[in-house]
Amino acid sequence: MKGSTHRRCYCRDPKTGRPLGKNCPQLTSRKHGSYSIRQELPPREDGTRRSFNRAGYDTLKAAQAGLDHVRALLGLTDADDPEGIHLIAEMLSDVSRDKLPLPDVEETRRRLNAGQDLVGSLTVAEWLDRWLAGKRIRKSGISRYETDVRVHLKPHTGTRRLDRLRVSHLSEMFTAITDANADILEQNAQRRSAVEELATVPWKGAENRARRKAMKMAIDAMPGFRRITGPSTRQHIKATLRAALNDAIGQQIITFNPAAHVEIDPVRKPKALVWTDERVARWQQTGEKPSPVMVWTPEQTGAFLDFVAADRLYAMWHLIAFRGLRRGEACGQPWSETNLDRHTLTVSGQLVQDGWDVEASEPKTDSGFRVVALDDDTTGVLERHRKHQKADRAEWGTAWVETGLLFTQEDGSWLHPGKVTDLFERLVAASGLPPIRLHDLRHGAATLMLAAGIDIKIVSDTLGHSDTRITRDIYQSVLPHVGKNAAEATAKLVPLQRKTDAEEATRKAEKARKKAQRRTKRKAEGTKKAGQKRPKK
Image (cartoon, rainbow, N blue to C red; front, top):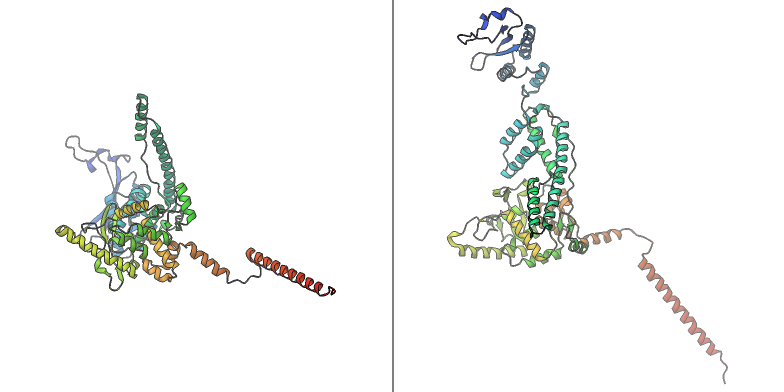
């Protein structure tokens, strides 16, 4: 294909303002103007012509090198490879239009053979935007991804070229997040200290008022209280980027996923602990929970259910406590999927929060779709709840909102999951019982089922877990008496010759008793013999 170099300048006729072009009298000087290249490219699919044009070369030698570079790129494909010819032509056309540097020949050859984009100018931010736009998941999931991208990934890595993103870049990002956490903690501590000091300053007196005013101004100038980016959030950031880059690999845009190899601090999931008497006493003294995840004993669960027996949502608390439904599943459970005659309900949907908005959604995973068996007592509770709901419907009349759900507001409309949690916390505080979260009722249901000797597979299916290991690792909090019984059963399997302290004491006491009996017997026999030898009078 035709290609050429030529020299031109940008001088203009002072009278007409038009470019002089080849008529410029200074072109006779080699130092005047610059060199340009033009290379004919394969025509477009509709047959129209196109070319590669570039100006600004200082010397003819540099221009000729640029033209040779373009021709070398055109020579990467064979004449019998129309797709490759089209890709190279499109790449050179884009490079010429956007005035991008000519890509390396060998790198282009590798990309062409690997089926990747030939121009690797796509940035991380551009790809993340494209990836988010193509996601087809529920709104709350998209919001979580968008938060990771907007708050962390774009600020730290967005300007980098996608194909040049490295593990070291991600390590630097997480190091920066850790450093920012330290700053946030320090700023929070300073603001908290200032607020506490302000609370000690009296209101009365001009001097005190002036001091309070100055302190308030200083507090307002401080950064507001902020949350740090914890280990779980950092893991989610990594998972978001890893998923996005995996999709880029799937579309043959890149070949390596650095997010799969960056190392960050692991997340230690808190273990569920049972509220034993000792822990309750400690909580009453200090107000501190031994673990973020706490589980009531059967007695404490019963005490709570008795306390809330008159609550309008008692049936919901009962169902979660015994059958382990998630909050959103309980809020979104329809009557059409609840068969009290057969003592079952089918979990097929849920209400989820996106910020403070609520939307109906399917279960999070396939295992979330499940049939949950109901015991007689729970069935009776739901029967009574249905009667109360029918009475509410009749009372509201035409103002009743027909949602078809088990648990609703007074007018039949959706329950807000966040408000349900707030109500539960208030009820727990009013009951005087040690605090647990609403989700901890689910932990408690799993613990009760396992303590009752129910097979782990049945417990896992009831809770909607995809794997029994999840049930064991997260929800199996051993109740004290269950652990004691297991320990005793284990100890009895091993025959030991040694005696316990109690057994040894009993043995010694028995030995002493028998010894005393023998001594008494010998004494009695000696007295009898002495009486037989006494002479008759």
